[in-house]
Length: 295
Image (cartoon, rainbow, N blue to C red; front, side, top):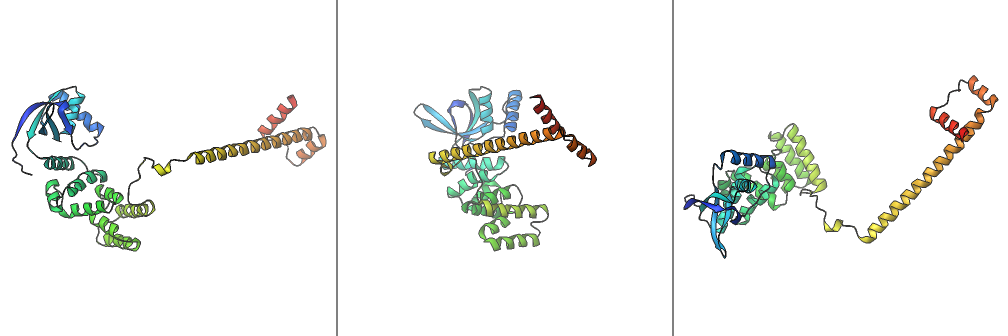
């Protein structure tokens, strides 16, 4: 993209700005932005592009989502903006690059950013140049994305394993995966805690798959009415069995309590217990015998 595009700063309506590549924001960081703008004002204008609409000019945000949302949170209706000339593809790419440069990468971020630029036809060297990453790193990330290796990608972005090792794991079978770990150890790429993390990651990948588990239930997990009825009947039957067991236990306790009560009224039995040094009784049993005698 031409870095010398014509541009000028204008005050534009906040309501007429569209965020073309929104991202989730850390609330603590966002509060700091709001507080800073409220205290000292906006230090740097946002960047937008203008296009005509039926109700007048509208604007697509290129960078500055946090500043824009801070203005909205403060109830401001106008915001200083650097207006640049760029086509739709350039706007999207510049927004993606802005996101890449400003946040700590996670697998889902790279999926939207580097993967998005790759889908728009940019080569790996071009993506590397725009994002400030190495070509090898971008090439590895693209390969992991193509193979759906989100679990490995997250480990790469968190610094747990090198991208080269992750690609070798993605390309290998079960035997090859162990060989890749061994080679990484010998090359001093994975040692100590990182090696343990890599082994655990491989085990989880083998057991749970390449992707990351989401909390949204799939349609096939929704139970049918017949399944709900069977579950209700099974639960009812378990509770009935529990009640029968409780009643049987209570009857046994009543029988034992009555038996002990009668035996303790037999002087010969009590004398035998004393002679055998068995004249102590658990406190709970004594309480039950006393309650039985009262009733």
